[in-house]
Length: 90
Image (cartoon, rainbow, N blue to C red; front, side, top):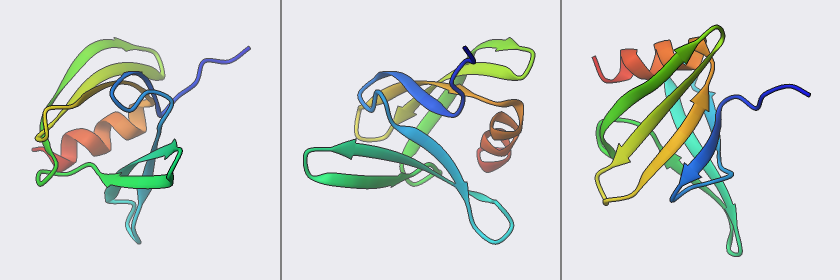
């Protein structure tokens, strides 16, 4: 059984998915599925105050994303997604 990647594994948006979008794959969103349907939250400087790398392993990283509205999520992401996340906040 494989390990889930680009998913929210804990916190306020648990069981959400992290997706990379845009023509140049330069936009990132968090997709949640709830009682009111699907909700897309942009992951950028307007919605996120900071992110922290918790662990880095081969092909998988755990990061905590702190949102400006006070919510936070622990996510499991691939190296490629982590690189894009770092580029957004650099």
